[in-house]
Length: 153
Length: 153
DNA sequence: GGGAGGGATGAGACTGAGTATCATGACTGT
DNA sequence: ACAGTCATGATACTCAGTCTCATCCCTCCC
Image 1 (cartoon, protein in one colour):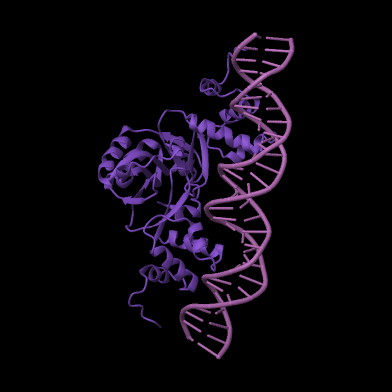
Image 2 (cartoon, helix red, strand yellow):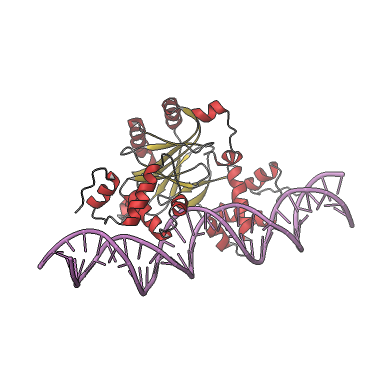
């Protein structure tokens, strides 16, 4: 039995849920902890070529179910994963640089409950993504990709 | 020059935008006007086997850009298309039967503007989907598919 | 009604994201 | 140290959508 002084809390969380601590899982977790922005499954597959494709996807699913990472869509619909820093939140995605932010306001949830009454059903989940031009891109005056126009919701 | 007494207003809208009225397009539009629920591109491909796959996708893209149909995601992330009945709206998707509803409240847009101030960027689009159990499914006490739990946002 | 020109189509190969299968390999508790 | 079981990797497959390019057929104009 080893005591990990500076071990990953992510790994600990998985172990607490009864999942084994295996080398591929440790490598995947280590890899994505280094990233401070959104990533694709393909990024991990490329970065860790000795780990099987299926294992990467299986681990991603595990982490999603444990709430450790979350899945979101770029404005084009392309999937991205991102480390979840807070319990429940929504995402902002910059359409020019792809930077991902998190936000949370109780207002959103209150609003949803309100809407629930009109909608004729019980709300059991939601997906909210805001597509923005982040401050940095605005300063740098980066052009908006053309495909954005065909995807505004 | 033919005058279509009961012609499709969708077709007219496309023509007004300078697109040609071709047989495949008419067939696709006719097909999806019959549907009063969400559909997949694959549904159309299956229903219209004599129309090329690429053409179906090209037409879908056209209709998306013209705002005639809209694209949304089931809770699992599977894409669905649906006829847009009103200008700007959001969707409710029943997680058990897949029924798609539309809703619009000015409150949502006001809220988003408010959030925009905190978020440090300019909001240029958003995606909002509410996953619900519709009244009909609730009455019939239909079981919630298990995969829903792994996808709550 | 008959071209001319260019936008639209279809066949098919390709990509990207993810799943299914299954024999083999490696953790963990005792 | 072992047994049992969970996890892995190779590979083939599916689903959604894109790309290419030769051919077609709409529309406009005469």
